Length: 254
Image 1 (cartoon, helix red, strand yellow):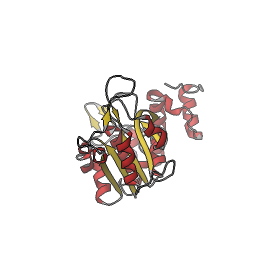
Image 2 (cartoon, rainbow, N blue to C red; image 1 turned 135 degrees about the vertical axis):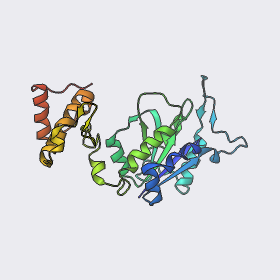
Image 3 (cartoon, helix red, strand yellow; image 1 turned 90 degrees about the vertical axis):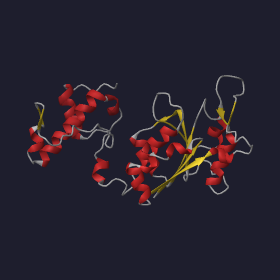
Image 4 (tube, rainbow, N blue to C red; image 1 turned 120 degrees about the vertical axis):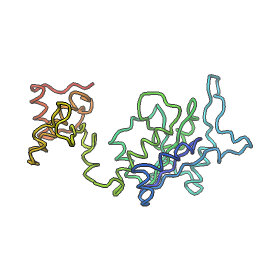
């Protein structure tokens, strides 16, 4: 079971995504719960003000700390449990640690996550200093807010929950699950527009197919994302394949 609370100024953003795909399946079967929390419900003025101009001047607005602290306190039953394991409080910000499959697996170990969606020019620094456990970014590009990032994290973590994805094998063999890109995939017809499926995949020899797929995964990773191999603990087979491809030279990170 995984519980995720999402603190946002735009809870309606999540209405459609939570009704589709594996997230819907997980919700329907009670394997996960996702609760969008409207931060404006935790303001105290009649205008429901959740942002204000930055001290020191500058363009844009900054999200106020009070609604965020109040929302988290409400979720946790009236107490701020800073730096404790459950729930794990995460601020989605461009300044955070880069999200990855490894990070998704780490977050899955927590029974409950609280995702805080930043907006505008950012979030008052006191939220980082006095509330959150982690700061996470999904990449080096500009988004209007953390809602898209929250959906990425929700799906990446939810699919690791037992039963959400139909076949466990599908999860274990996806790209990045073993720090390699996935091998090429083919289906019927075996010939199309002059392009043919590799003969090995039609052979029925599962041992040779597995070996071919590993070689293709390593080749694809070397050519497209060599940076993934930096720091990866290679198996003996992977090391020999890389040496064969590169002539014994170590892969260069991109």
